[in-house]
Amino acid sequence: MKKFAFFCVLALIGRGFSAPHLQKYLENDLELKRLAFELEKTMLSAKEMKIDNGFSLKLSTGTLTLQSQGDSMNVNFTPSLTASIPQANNLGATISSNIKIQNGENNTENTKISLSADIISGGRITRKVNLMKADRDVLEAKRDLQNRALEAEKEYYAELKNLFTAANSIITAQTNLYEDTIDFEEVKAKGYSNSSAKYRQAELKVFDDRHSVETAVRKLEHDCAVFASKCGELFETGAKPEDFLPSKIEQVEIVAISSYKKDMYTKIEGAKYTHEYNSLVREAKKNFTLSANAGYTFNNPSAKTTGIADIGGSTVDTISKNKTDTIDAGLTAGWNGLNMGAGISFPVGADFSHLIYTVSAVFNPNELRKSRITKKQDACSEEEEFIAIQAAEDSYETSVVDQNQSLADIVWSKQSNSEFYNMYVELEKDMAEYLKAGVITESEYLNSYANKERYRINLLINDIDLIIYNNTTKLLFCRDEEIN
Image (cartoon, rainbow, N blue to C red; front, side, top):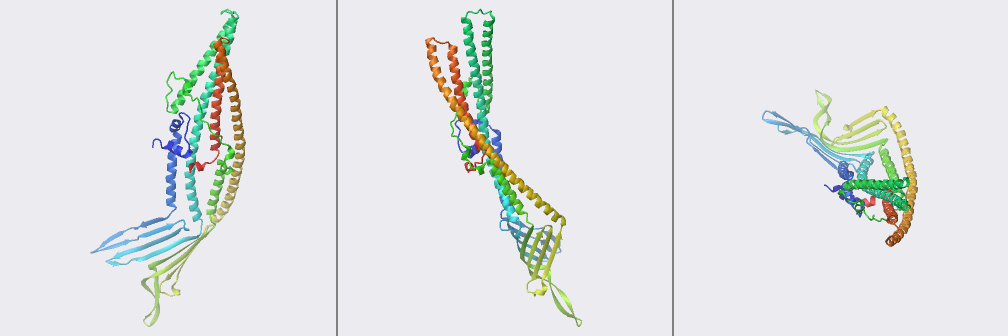
């Protein structure tokens, strides 16, 4: 599991890296590792959710009671078997019984086989919402890991850009040193004595410039050592930054913001998903619910047949102690705090005069009042979601302008730096010839060489800026096709 995070990154971002040390930099990123394990946890949670919202089977023995009575043993327990299919309107089936064995006789009663299902309810939608949330959690965990890879890459190149910028500042300081050295040579050529103010000022300026260069070099060496440690490398004492820093930067194709669909803009996609999800949650809050059940009961103790007997010359009603089988059915309804239930049992073999009816009703006026408040709250929430979608669309328009302008600035800067670099390349060649011929001083040649290096580094920074721009653009959008 040591490199699990990095392997996940390679799978999610869909490309390798040619920049030196970048792979190791990503491998050492602790946030990437954490998000990789977070993804694994989220996927496991999603599996649990799908199990909870799928077909279920439950077997229970009930409480088993054993009672010795002389030479016999009385046994009493209530086993049950329950199966449910939430995706089929919460269809459920139950088999239960009250098993009694007394004095060796089987007095089992109340064996029920029943089916139940929702006719009108939010159960199906609630299940859909739960599964939708589980899938979304996994998708967002994948996106977090995918985006962290780009963010870590941006951080890598941002630090590399800082190192190049520091190198450029050294070149600028060296340019000042060469220019002041030329001025100092002119002072000496004019015959000023080394004790004169003019001579000493020019000399001190050269010393000050040399100190500035040395200070900047030491700081760059320090920063290179820190950066190397983040990449799992060692920047040894005495190593030169120019040998450590890459001489080339990966050339990448421009990722135009127009190449992505507006609907996949992260804020728009998130706002629309939130509205879709919350709409389903609100839809699941049914004002009226209705469910039905039906079944068959063997030896129903509540269904005792009645009859007529002749006792002492007169007729009286009698109740048989024999239990009979019944066919059972019922309905349960609910509406804004009012819950009603009705059931009927029909003893098998008896006429319709022996039907058993059950009726129940519960009314909670506070639930009715709260339901009205809930409706208003839901209406306000929906309006807020529409505002969030509009705000996301406005943000998209701002991002388009921002990114297009950033890209234009990078392209312009690279073109300008390229022109100056080519000019200084030619100038450096000419100055090298002049130096060989003794026409110019070494300081004058080094000045032209420093300017050439300055623009070379500027071009490398432009390449880094383009990579950072690409990553910034990608992070503005959902790129699920790369994950898939």
